[in-house]
Image 1 (cartoon, one colour):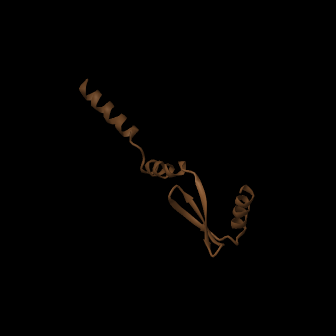
Image 2 (cartoon, helix red, strand yellow):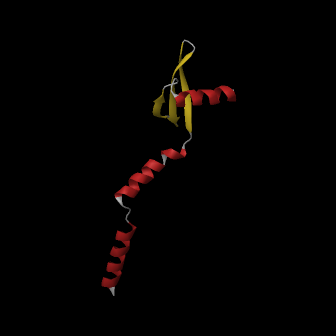
Image 3 (cartoon, one colour):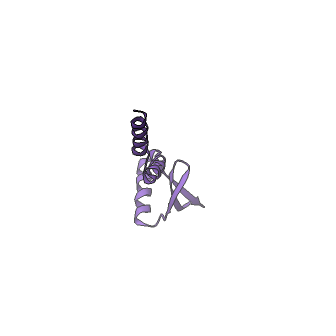
Length: 80
């Protein structure tokens, strides 16, 4: 009877152990809960870059002269 309990416990612990990929996915999913925001970097009154941020983490830099950069700036100019 005890042997069955031990085998049962071992089987359940193996089934419940998360795969390494699942752990990495969960770790990556946590920052995505924070909102993505944009910050304009200005020099002498001209926007020289747009930072895409997630919380305090810098995701990427967007050129304000690019199509995407112009769209982002247009959204903020009309919102203000």
